[in-house]
Image 1 (tube, rainbow, N blue to C red):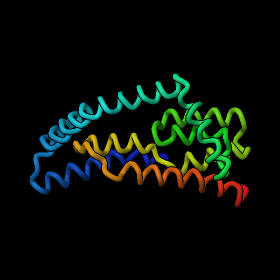
Image 2: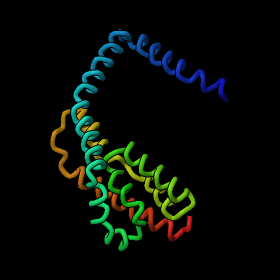
Image 3: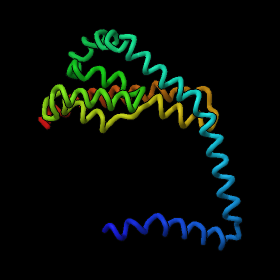
Length: 173
């Protein structure tokens, strides 16, 4: 199996180059143009991504994450989300690395087979870093107003958090 997988990338590259030549395209020029556009997109995305990183760092370091978590405790009790998983639900839509760090802490403190560990595992597998995705996808094409995208995505995240807790309790997984 390892021999087959080591040939996949060279074969795909060769097929693309051969297809380009067959269509009469200047393959190298197309590659350079694409690389240039990719670099321009990366430069456009850098400021919003830096803002996102600074915002997440400030949220964690200022103690605001704990304040938000305490404010959400009644909602967590109502929905069945363990209170120790709440910081993960706050960070998950904002930062993939921040939520991964929080997830690792939950597993380390409670274990992967605890209710907290199982709910956190399901959340990590069923949610998206909403603000990161909107920043990258909308920023790459220059969209400034996201309309209903963010509220709809946050509603989907909240639904995922609640269903994750329900799934763990109902299926006892």
